[in-house]
Length: 308
Image 1: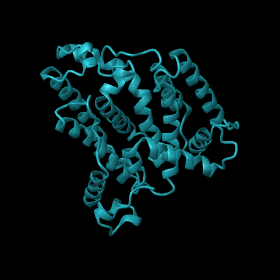
Image 2: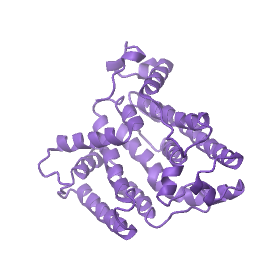
Image 3: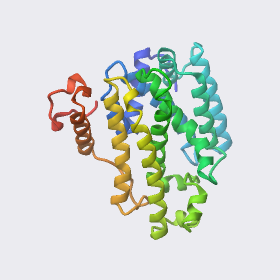
Image 4: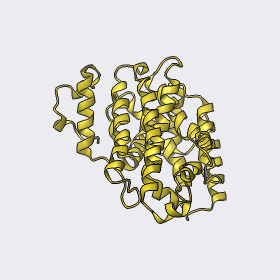
């Protein structure tokens, strides 16, 4: 991807387009941030998505090629962060955000470590093993977001990590079938065994009392993490708290959708509609009217515009 002809503003705009194209829920929540924050969230998402795309296109490249691609992307990222010119427009925007928002390179390398795990780790024996992956793939994203929104001190850190992991566990449960098709199982193998559910059952999309019990267990684990995250919302600066709470509510609602579907995560993707997103945004705003962005104050839920 060449961005030689793009201005820095153009690089951020490209990240916004990538964000909008690939994550409707997160993009909707991001649209509620103040204008000075939104581009940095788009850049963070663009960076993560770029790495994701390297490993989430089965059949297009070998695992060895994916690992090489990730290592090259990491090297280019660190070069960009160090101030060296790079052609990748996503990295130009991300590096600027890293500089302006004080994101440490340790968080970047931790994220890339987990991305590289996807090229050679396909099963997680226990939840503790999965946590080694979700630290880099999700917890550090929460920590990066702390820098982006201007959270001060370290008190918010464990809560931000919990929110990142809760959202990722939610995605794992929603995408069980898709991940299995890529050869990956993110549900801990010890959990499958605890409920007498085999990998072969997962491959066939078997939904029975064993699978329902397994999913209920995993959903409860995610919801406990959302509770931990809730305890740290008070640390987020006013003006930025509202979008984070909306994102939290929308992702948690995916778990409700899974339950409502009878835990069928194989036939259809559990998603929330735009109308539901607007209702959630309005409900969160009603709980704390002072948090709603000035541009949306006085508007009814129906008049909240779709993000451009």
